[in-house]
Image 1 (tube, rainbow, N blue to C red):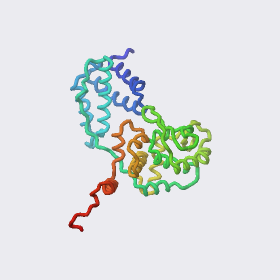
Image 2 (cartoon, one colour):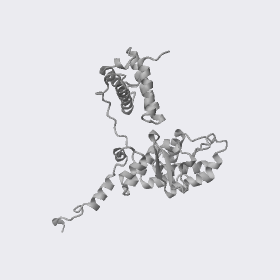
Image 3 (cartoon, rainbow, N blue to C red):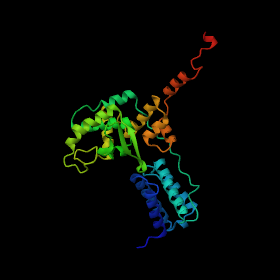
Image 4 (tube, helix red, strand yellow):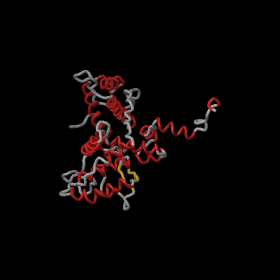
Length: 316
């Protein structure tokens, strides 16, 4: 069966995302889902060629996603999901124009719903200490869980980056970690003494017990059956530790990433250094993650402004 122009264009766009843009597998899957839904919408209108798509079609599609509700009358899709779908549609049509598949872009004036900034609230340093002290047992799984918590907070790496770590990710002296980030971009991040010690304990005494019949001999973090730990399992480990100290509803791997960045900025780290640590392409992204607390803002202001603590004549 010969693919029609719409199907061919979607497949070529998918290849472009992989080869030219180097998107990570999870990002490509998100594009696949969004464009599959878009394709279904277009075909329901009898459209089988990108050339035939006009602005009204795109507006109706994005508007329909934003207006869709579930059985209870609540929005069927979150604003972030609608915005992501709009990004996929714009990417597809811009690709079609760039490759000469279509003469114009029908999505160039299509907006998406504003997505509220979902900035997680960083844990306080005492809360971090309580969390890291919540895993004290010395059995293999507890050693693994402690190493995961320490490493997430020490380095600010993403959950997908952590579970993707192989044994050779650490350098010889265990002071830096090689991480494969978004878009298959590699970066090297430092690892503090406490995290190195936790990881060394796990590798020496925990992983050896878990690697029986290991299906992935290179994986750093293993599950109880010897396979590579999944994102879902890692997420549960973090939440379980948080539940022990009353932080379950606030805690996720991303909160530890945010806490790492926030605490570094609070202690005077240059934002460009934090940007490199987190693997952000733009410093503007880092600025969102590291929003300065009012307390820190006040302290820096009072320490820096020449008249912040000046007494008025009335006070003398």
